[in-house]
Length: 166
Image (cartoon, rainbow, N blue to C red; front, side):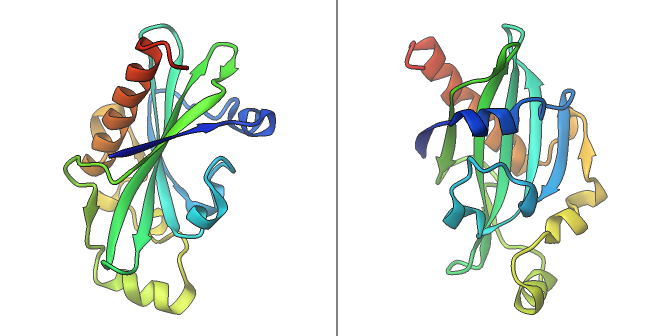
């Protein structure tokens, strides 16, 4: 797994302020991703699962678990970006995880996915056709691969915070 720590600009922090919903998850189209996702990367993202959960210190973990289209391997890879939102606002850094090893991180999309992409490009297939018919839910209902992404981000954040690297 390759963690990439990003410094958030004041504008990016303002953009993320107030985003963290109550504990749970929801799917958003790729067009609604925050600008902290680098532009070339954003163009490869179909949709994302936004997950929020309380931290042990009164803040909120906020994770965007992105469905990135991998044309070469004809798969969907989950690549999450996460940070802590403190009572005073979003932290000044977040972590983007590439090439994670959790179960469900990569897999083939439904057969009709490639037809939709060929016709209209990468858009919001999973937003319009959510897995298991759910577009939001509780923390217990987070789709499996995205749950693994969330847990990996939290481990990475905890390692950095506990190691006093933030």
